[in-house]
Amino acid sequence: MKIRINHITPNYLYLPAKVNSIDVKLVLDTGSAVSILNKSIFEKLGIAETQLGAFGVELIAADGKPIPVLGKFKLQLLLDCCAITHDFVIADIGEMEGIIGMDLLETYSASIDIANAEIKISDHSIKLEKENSRLCAFVRTVRKINGFQGVESEILFEPIRFPDNKGILLARAFINPQQGKVQVSALNSSSAVVTLSKNSIVGCKQPIKAATKVNVGINDKHEQALPEHLIPIIDKISPKVTESQKQSIKELLIDFQYIFVGPDGKLGRTNLAKHVINTGDAKPIKLPPRRAHITQRKVIETEIQKMLDQDIIEPSESPWATPILLVKKKDNSVRFCLDFRRINSVTKKDAYPLPRIDTCLDCLGGSEWYNTLDMASAK
Image (cartoon, rainbow, N blue to C red; front, side, top):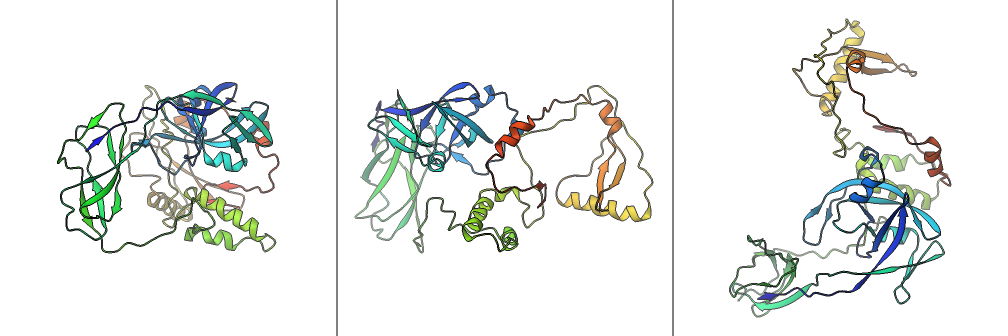
């Protein structure tokens, strides 16, 4: 069996735009569910990675390899004479500067005129530009493969990984052999001609007991089930809220379900940033514990156990130590704190500049629903 790459040089369309005065070429890709900005462009914007939101979905390239993702960020794009705001996934996508995906096209009800190389967004017609690119084409082939003779029922074809990394990718599929022949989809992801010798092993067959047909919608949030621990939020919605508004809230909860505390009660964590307390060459500061009232000891024990259960803290034999400080809040509940004043005095400060308040307020313009969040609780 011989699989060959077809070298084609079509004119793919991209949308010229500005992001914070930086010119970018955003490729139109209706096959992408999300819009993406290359991390190399994001780094030029001067925005700290700590400001990125979490993105709970793994991106996979055409060759099956995962794409490194930093997070997502709401960007303002200047397109010719109009400006739009949209959430972009920040990821390493190689040479491309960015991708306009279906999420943005659907949000702004965009229409693309291929013949005239134009896109209409928010009642503005914007001229698209073309660029030559060499692409990989899929090749589908049918060959008689030893081992399928006599097999008449549906089986699972499981492709192998070629040890010499020839760049060949075969699709895992449910197939129904007909007279010993099966149809296998294959892709050569390299830029060279690749030859598979006769009688080469390309995969194995696995029997299946039953096959169930499932109708799958394209990201239809109306059909997605809300996680059980978020259902009480919907149940508490005021009866004054319309059904369409309630559906919008449900879709919002589905989109951001990963930021809510789950049934295990754990807060979760992010891998988008790593914090280090830089004390330089200062000697460890070890302060003795303060004497706590008998009524406070139970609170301290409860809070420590709670943080242990949530993997927030862990036992340590560090030479650094600081006493516990319980601070009473306005509602008479207690806030568990540590007295870090001595440690702060020897710590080299990191710069975490706050964004402009007026810019943040501008982002809220036109909104009708507002919510306050406090880690594991919301109002």
